Length: 230
Image (cartoon, rainbow, N blue to C red):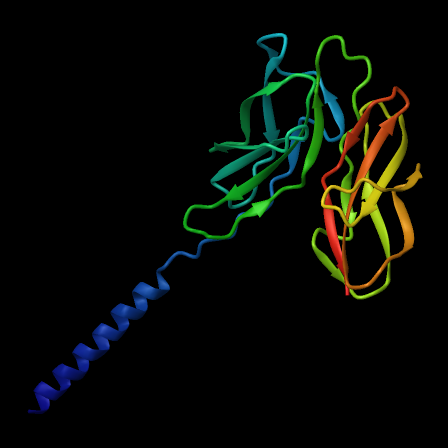
């Protein structure tokens, strides 16, 4: 009986050690880190790429390899249409067909097999070069504050954005602000990137956008954001 009891105890210990060993031997999946963008450069005209027609070129996007990442998702957005295209890559570059003379933004998402966690790079904008273009339309302004659909517990608000232009010839910004989903009321014209302490009515949802104009008479429209004053 004693031998049987010892045998049972030994079997239990063996199972426990075996289970514990399997658990300890499981590999830890390290989280992927953000990729650092390299090319095309931020806020510049991109003259690289292979021209395939009067309207199209093939451009190779490049970024630094991200730590712990084994694949990437390249996101390229046409700032004219808002259409985002996604491309998978197993290395740190990817060729993409683009329209010439069009502003784009791009970013890279780092991926790791076996991990649900991803990491997204910075967002860069550039213009794809085109023949005969002497002056480029400004990049659409990036709306910063208030954030989209933000709820604000005050009767005044400061609105902020950022703007860039390949030609560095931005003349002014026009801030449109009202209660229409596509605002048509010009609230301010300024060469700054902020309008401070705007008094508004509480309990109201407002919409805003920014039109960027350059010295050559070109203009671009930002997205439309909304915020609500409580």
